[in-house]
Image 1 (cartoon, one colour):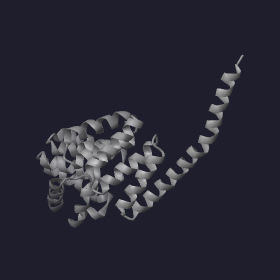
Image 2 (cartoon, one colour; image 1 turned 180 degrees about the vertical axis):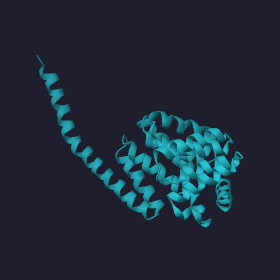
Image 3 (tube, rainbow, N blue to C red; image 1 turned 90 degrees about the horizontal axis):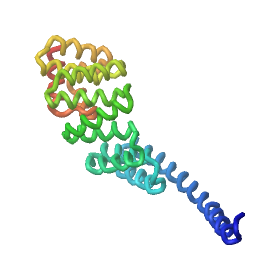
Length: 229
């Protein structure tokens, strides 16, 4: 039997929950609104405003990993790689199995030229999601930069098989063949990429590959393969 004192304590707890729930719900609603606002700003490439909106969303919903992932990726797009890594690690702390967070974090390290953590993180992301074409594609780029061409080719092929309409893995595979001395195979593979997207016939268009994780050297090699194709 509940004593009067215990009953009073339970009633106080319930009253507190009744008061706090609407506030919590309001915070979640506001966080969602800030996320949408941030996405709108990001689409317009207004990165500073997008980052501020995602930071506010993260404050209002501190256990929501998605807001931190959005924040981290936007910081990456804005060139704030150190801040991006910090935000993405905080998302992983909340959700240690978030494939999206690991994919984004691996890209941040790849762009920073920190190849060992990039490979470790993308390998883990591929273990979490075996059909993770993003992880395999970025592993290909990282292994190529480490001159591990067989690994680069294998991962590029895996990515291409998972996403056949994406020319990026084919270009990545062509790079690895080219630098491995397999020029004929590189040219054939690059032509396959052109078959997927005709814009890859234009040398100037290849500068866009920077946004797809390619390094400056990899872009220049891509232009060499194109010239030979």
